[in-house]
Amino acid sequence: MQSGRGPARSRHPRSGRAIPITTEEPNLNASVQLAAAVVPAAGRGERLGPGAPKALRELGGVPLLVHAVRALARSRAVGLVVVCAPPDGVAEVVSLLDSHGLDGKDVRVVPGGASRQESVRLGLAAVPEGTRVVLVHDAARPLVPVEVVDAVAAAVRAGAGAVVPAVPLADTVKRVEPQPSGPEPVLDTPDRAALRAVQTPQGFDLPGLVEAHGRALAEGVEVTDDAGLIERFGGRVVVVPGHEEAFKVTRPLDLVLAEAVLARRRATDGY
Ligand SMILES: Nc1ccn([C@@H]2O[C@H](COP(=O)(O)OP(=O)(O)OP(=O)(O)O)[C@@H](O)[C@H]2O)c(=O)n1
Ligand SMILES: C[C@](O)(CO)[C@H](O)COP(=O)(O)O
Image 1 (cartoon, rainbow, N blue to C red):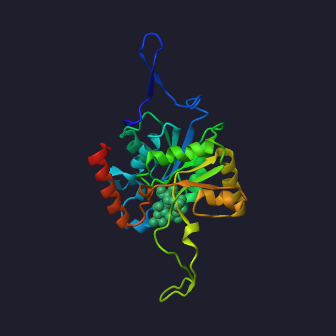
Image 2 (cartoon, rainbow, N blue to C red):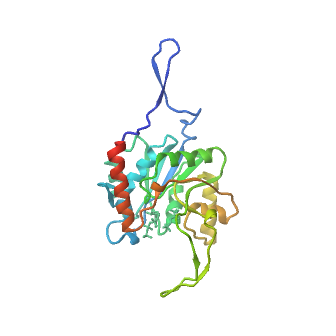
Image 3 (cartoon, rainbow, N blue to C red):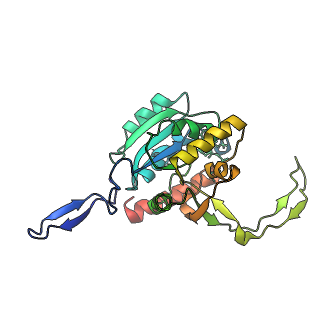
């Protein structure tokens, strides 16, 4: 796969010949400095309707998972991608990824688990010790721009232990008393200015995230995102700007939107 962000070049001071520069930051290319990315891809996609596991369904003729892995592989901050496949689909995912160019990145596949949290925990176990920065990115967010990946990785490298990309809410939000059917009484209207819709990739110091997942397993804590575990155990999480095109493909309408975004990128950006 073509990165679209090839190595920068400098000129030799005497000969004037181009010298490839593999990194803009000293040591970024030392493998220990590159981020690993864990991609939970073992969900069924019940809300998308009947069909193959969601990560294997196609967007513009290419599986969502391949889009998501390519999105990470475009980032020069990422050196390794660990995919958490449906437990009965590891071989299929391996051959799927083999058949698509992935920018020369190291891509490994492990069986995922029964919940997103379990899949991420199993994926983290395949990240080499000594890796400092780990990103966790949903296969179901195929169109995340590389700028978001880079910004999250950079914020972790700069010292934030846990970083989430997020966007402001477009709608007014009401907190309700959920009812199985019929009208739901409104409790209050939170101040929208202080709310954010959280996306992925979320970025972490690897040891902190591994410890949080281990503790969650021991204490039976289940949350919907990885940063939620850091928060639960008293850690600090910061938000950086996300992107409207990093939305999660959850329901059928999301796939329609994703097809439109992809068609526009292919027409205008040679994506
Ligand atoms: N057991 C699971 C469940 C979810 N995921 C992954 O977590 C991400 C976010 O989950 P979501 O989009 O909610 O996917 P599903 O769980 O597949 O959706 P649904 O609830 O509609 O079945 C997806 O990339 C999904 O593949 C996973 O790796 N393992
Ligand atoms: C991790 C996540 O994508 C952040 O918005 C989200 O929490 C996953 O949610 P789901 O419960 O798996 O739909």
